Amino acid sequence: MSDDTDWTGGCLCGKRRYRFRRPPSTAGYCHCSMCRRATGGPFAFLVRVDEAALEWTASRPAVYRSSPIAERGFCPDCGSPLFLRYDDDGRIRLTGGSLDHPELIRPQYHYGVESRLPWMDCGQGLREEETRERF
Ligand SMILES: [Zn+2]
Ligand SMILES: [Zn+2]
Image 1 (cartoon, rainbow, N blue to C red):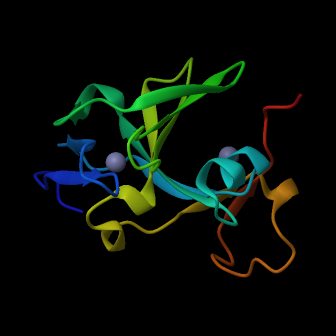
Image 2: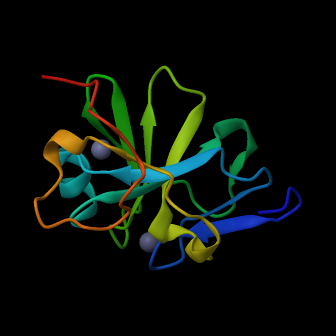
């Protein structure tokens, strides 16, 4: 991950596209049930980037308030989940699968491990943390 890489990504239909200049600060798995539902997968692969360095280069995504402390962005045309953003955080968590080159980023931690599916066997040995957000 070099500093001058132009990182890009977007939704399935191509109407929502983003770019960021600075490399991601970190990336990891989130196993929480909200991420499961929001992505439709067994976990979310989330890539944290500075929101100030992120630019939407086509139309902006639609936003859904998914909890009292966070919202999620998605493409209203094709439904692709694009990000999770906590209200008190200057970083945005992009869905790793929406990157044009997700192979350049490796997950570094597990979050929400209390909800991890019992058959989930990827990313062994990575740091683990439980969800702070409780309802
Ligand atoms: Zn789309
Ligand atoms: Zn989550």
